[in-house]
Length: 306
Image (tube, rainbow, N blue to C red; front, side, top):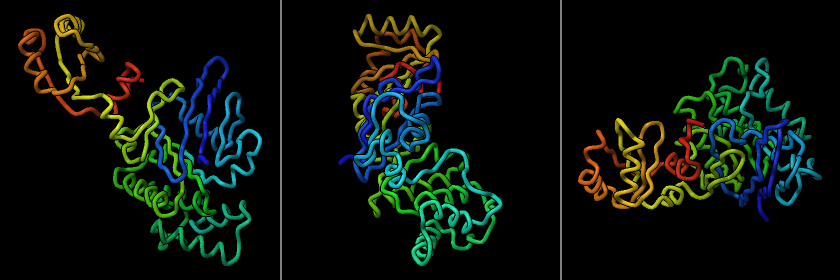
């Protein structure tokens, strides 16, 4: 049984279609990052999976339960971490956890055990009695995670969990997510617009204009381009791209005033380019493909230009 099955999901806000037939399967125990720039449909998908909005078209099942017809059972399997803080800043860390536990009917010795375990795993024991308003952004995020995992969910969904965190806190966050996936078998699905963060997942689902345009491991996605990324700067990039296509019979893209092409054996291609069109460009760089190169190849746009 799949942890999540998303089939041909469509969602509209008035005249704007946020999700356009999006489909995605997630296996139990996987960590999957839904990667896309702002406005690509990630947060809408998060809200549908977490039953915060009603379905319009398509189907989403969580461990075989439909979010459309069996939302209560879906919620029981979910741990949710929102992009915006959902903690009561006037309560202590422990009080926030107790309030959350009450919604799931947790109490007594079992609740004491779970709170102690979460505080220990997230290194919050010495801050349990502190009011949330006194905590740093990274510590608040840890409390959010403790709250989301308190009822021992089978699926943890997170919407832009690194928002507002410094690099060290971001690294701590993803270390913990790796632990809950590997040690507890929890399925983790996180939305993100951070390319470097997405590479920590088992698989990345790249979303563009409400659709999944690529989904695979980070290594496989970059290897799918089949070579090196070559960038050329020129005073007339359109003329340079046309000259490359005519002389070498290969595609060359112009993006943000820069000519780009992907070719195997980039260093050999550098020599060919210098010999064939060297008088038309000022600078040439070669690098291994990145996730942004994958995004460009699948969409024809730069990631942050979206």
